[in-house]
Amino acid sequence: MKSYKHILFDLDGTLTDPAEGITKCIAYALEAKGIITPNLDSLKPLIGPPLKDTFMHSYGFGEQEALACVDKYRERFAMQGLYENMLFDGVPELLERLKSKDYKVYLATSKPEIFAHRILQHFAIDQYFDFAGGSALDDSRPTKTSVIQYVMENARLTNPHDCIMIGDRKHDLIGARETNMDAIAVLYGYGSQAELEQESPAYLLHSVADLIEFFG
Image 1 (cartoon, rainbow, N blue to C red):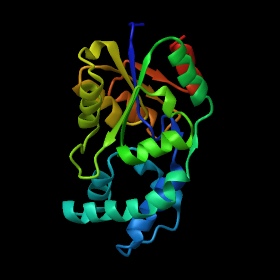
Image 2 (tube, rainbow, N blue to C red):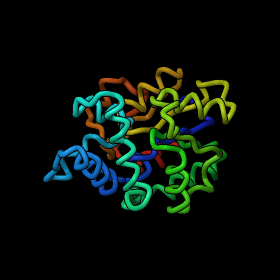
Image 3 (cartoon, rainbow, N blue to C red):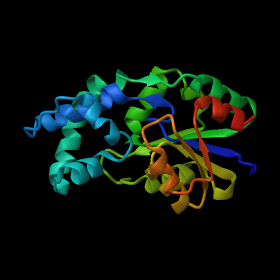
């Protein structure tokens, strides 16, 4: 294994299981457009990618219509959906292990940064992160690549070969590749094995326990 110094984590599907909150908030936004979702589980494949892209690609909305749906989603998420969420088993132990071994730990999430900080604080894991970056409410960081670049700039990470990105969807792996860093794909989140293998991550792990073992 290469020697890494800086560990970047995705949030949804990697550190937390946000299925209840995200699916209910997507359904809430769709209902405002007259689209009823009888089975919330049908929305689980939408967890992870940037929301604007989800509304455009999955429902055929134009950009402005998709942005209006994002605003409607956030209306419920800020009040309720944020807390309809849980940590995956073993995440606090993983973060504690990384810090005890002097790794630098960062968050790189497509979730708006203001919400990401509240989630880390809610679960009392914010103290483990050297920097936590997310997307912007004004859509100025619309891709995972742009979020990773933002984290690297703010954390002054000048050598991507010292960094590794951990995530559960193809967007995490594409973002890592486009910023010239390795990636770990995790299979306990919301991306299928086929989706993840297609992006050729450096490593493919099945559980949080595997991550703990990976970093020793």
